[in-house]
Amino acid sequence: MVYAMNTAAIRTDWVGRGIDGRFTLLQWLGGSESGGVFLTELQGSRSQKAAIKLIPADATDAEAHIACWAATTTLSHPHLMRLFQTGRCQIDTTGLLYAVTEYAEEVLSQILPERPLTPPEAREMLDPVLDALSYLHGKGFVHGHLKPSNIMVVDNQLKLSSDCLHVAGELGNHFPSPSIYDAPETATEPISPAADVWSLGVTLVEAVTQHPPVWDRSTHREPIVPQSIPQPFADITQECLRFDPSRRWTLSDVKARLEHARSLPEPASKTRRAVPAKLRVTALVAAVLILIAAAIAALLLRSHRVEPKFTAGEKLVLKISAPPLQSPVPETQTSKGAEVKGAVAGRVLPDVLRSASKTIQGKVEVRIRVTVDPSGNVSNAAFDSPGPSKYFAKLALQAAQHWRFKPAQVDGQAVSSVWILQFQFTQTATLVAPVQASP
Image (tube, rainbow, N blue to C red; front, side):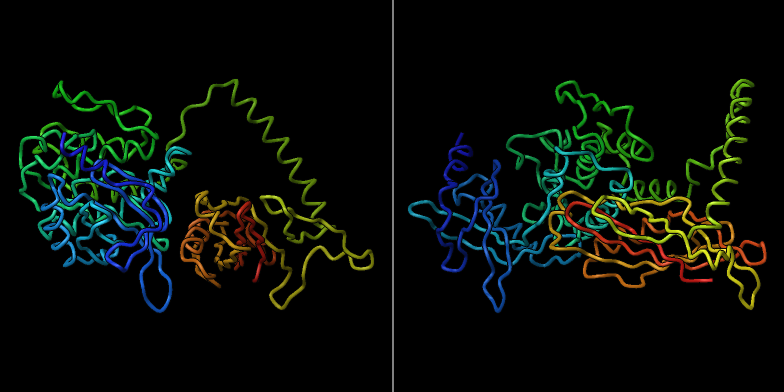
C-alpha cells in the first residue's frame, strides 16, 4: 500500500533535527497511520511546549490535510486545541507537511489503561466535548476522529484535537483503515455530524469501562453496550450507537439526557424497600446500641476538646486532648446563651487524577468557606482562598458541597454555622482540616 510506505517514512530517530528552521524535534511522542508527533517549543520571550505533527507530503490524503489546516485556522473555541503553524518542509530526502499545535499534559487514552472514569468524571468530560462538537457542526465541520487519544487536557482545560477535521459532506474514502470509532456509513457515504455522535458513543463506553464496545462491522448490527454501564450513560451510548445514522440521537438529545439526570434526586432519596421482620428486630437492637454509644460519646466530648491536626497519612487525624482540670466547662456562655460547637458528621475527599497529582511541586492549598444549615447540610460553599490551581480549587469546592455536619446549638436549638475546610493536596495525599468559624 502506498499509504503505509509513506507513513513509514516518519522516523523516531529524527529527534534533534530542525523543521523549517524554526522548530526542533525534542522528543518522539507517538505515531499513527497518518503520521508522527514530536515535542517541540515555540519561539518567543518565554519557552512554551508545543506538539508538531509530521505527515509525508506524498501521502494519499496530503492535500486534504492542507485544506483542512487552512480552514481550521479560522476556528476558535476554548475546548479545541489551538493550531499555531502549518507548512511544508524536508528532512534529508523526505518531503513533509507539518502542523504545530498546543501540547497536552494529559490524554484520556493514557488514563484509561490505569482505571475507568468515575460517573462524575464522565459527566465532566462530556460537557466540554459536546460544546466543542456543537461549535464545529455549527461551522460546517465534522471532527471525524473523536476517540480517547484525541481528548486532551491543556492547562487544566479539556480540549479536542483540531488537526484532522473534515468538512461536512466530504466523501468517506479519507478513512484508509476504518476502526470501531468510525461510523459504519463513513466508508461509502459523505461524512455528517451523525458520525461524531457514533464516535462519542464508542468513546463514552470505553471511558467508563476501559474497553470499547464489541462490534462486528460486517453484520450490520449495532455494538453490544455492556449492561454494567450506569445511567444516564447507558441510554446515551445505546442511542448514539444506532447503525442507522438517522436514528441516532443528536448532540442536543445527549445534552437533554444529561440535564434530566442532573435534575433527579440523589439515589439516597429513593423510596425504601420493605424490611423483613427479622431484619427490623436486628435493626432495633443496633439502634439501641448506637444510642448508648452516642450517650457515652457525648459524655466524653464534654470533657475533651477536638483539635484538627495534619499528619503524613492520607486522611486528617483528630487529636483529642483533655482541658485543664480547673476549667471543666462543657459549653460556651455567650450573649446568645449556652453555645455548643458543631462537628463533622461525614466528609468527602476529592477524587484527584493520578496524573494531576504528579504535577504538584510541594503542596497546593485551597480553603473553602461553607455555610451549614440547622439540619447539618451545606447550604453554600465558596472560595475563601482558591490557591494557584483552578483544577484543584474546583475539586475542593465540589467535595466541600457534599460534607455533612452535626449542627451547632445555642440554648439547645440547632443553628446555622460557618466552617473553613482547609484542603491540602500533595503528590501522595489529600488532607482536609475543618475549622468551625462561627457561631
